[in-house]
Image (tube, rainbow, N blue to C red; front, side, top):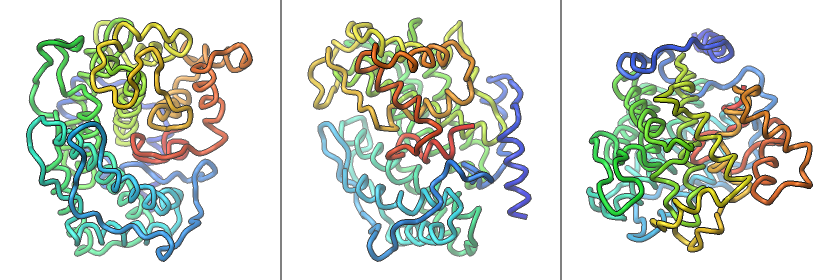
Length: 397
């Protein structure tokens, strides 16, 4: 039965998905492949399939309470745990039985320990923002995706399944953020009129809800992310910049890239259930336009200065004229894996292809995007927090 489901799934994944009306998807989409968030591909050439660690030298010990700072930043203990968990999760996503057994073991350990408890404020204080993102980004999303991988490969008992799912429900519900109320920015910001549910933190929470919905076969939970996706697309500026993200000083494009990767994760997960939301458009605004702004920025970084100068929570990047954009982080570039392989003939990708043959004439930002573009089908990405999974294996077509 498991093999039949995966084969059926792969047929959907590799075929052209019809352009259904987004409004209908948002209101009536149902889960077509319960339990499968990302399918383990039949052809694993692009995947990491070997496990290079063991449970003795790669302990992923439960972190019980979330203690993110009240200023800028997250609880990095969970990032450290995620990095170790990825050593099992990635080869599990490539079909390794041994890795999947370790994925199940780790998640059971965390569930039984009632790990990732958030006891901080439940309002919009900075610590609340940082705590909830810590859990969604570094615990809930990667562990739910890993659990979905494991269930495609190994046996999980009913008792184990209940323990794990009960814990997932607890941490996702406790850390929902900016998802349900249409509160808009009202003053002292360039993001006036934009719903807070378009924020990258809300997108991260939406991804968690979407995955939980698939694991529980809960259609309402699954559909919740579509509203966040809609607002992010709908409330972009005409030039493709995202108002909430691009006001953030030297990290304006850092956060636009993360939001783009989060939107991509939502679109890929939706696609894996048979729904195409890539082409959702509102008055000429779509995901292609957001991509165009990002590419435009790499050619002329000054286009973001008029937004970035607001200096809203820029973290360590205090100079808005020097955009902090790590050339190797999949958080900033993960969207490219899915986008370039789905829209190879789009003018955005044609532009990158032209640049790739004139590498010596490019500026530093252009070289960063071309380096990632040229390596999409050649090497696996680094960390996979915002992409949820390793993007070369699970985002490319």
